[in-house]
Image (tube, rainbow, N blue to C red; front, side):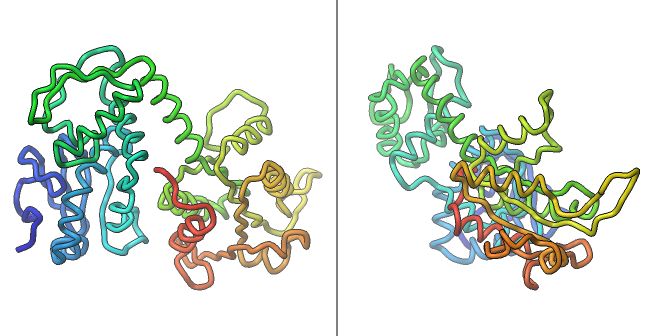
Length: 341
């Protein structure tokens, strides 16, 4: 038997708390509901990989409780852990653990956001052993180093600390609240990805696959026909592009046809415009296009740009015979880096 709690036990697999609820999953694995870690699932294969390797299990037990608690505070909702599977909305176990902040400055910033999500400003709260999960450290001394850094920055006030233990009163200062709000806004700005595309039944599967790839890479898809607004549509489009970390432009189209005296379908002029506007702002623009349009309709000016060519295989989107979601995810990470989500 490995280091993790037995999958048949009632303990939370991540933080080992006894108060969790465990359910059989309709997938291969178990579902958990924990007060600290939120709702999540883990596949049998991921459990075998983690529990079967002592180094991975130790890393999982060291990092996973902080990452799960952070996700819960951020309201990200349920998540699932698997080993090397991307055809479902899984979080790969290695991607999950790689999100742990190793850099001290990042640890301090993310701890401030955890406090911001947990406590109201200018009110005193008692921090006890369980609250170490806010600071990404298991040991008292290491957790207190993060607390001290936040205090020295003026973000929090600490009083009534009990020596030789992790127990004290914490107050989020007004300056700390402002800093956390700005940091939260900066992260939100860094997570958005504008998707320029043709909205049609023909592209519904592409849209959902692209959304999954963007989220798997750590970003959030911004798709204009899903955003509620009261503005002239192009003003909203241009603002969404300005707020984005990068843009994905899909040049897919079909042959033109005439309906009611107007040209329908054909080359998507709006996508070309939006891609050019984003490029003019200095944003990275990733080009995609379905195979038929790439071969017949893609304009000469963008043919020289590296383009991810996709096609439908039933309900699945593929690119050059590979899984499109996994391919686009890796392309995003290689091009602009992993996102903060």
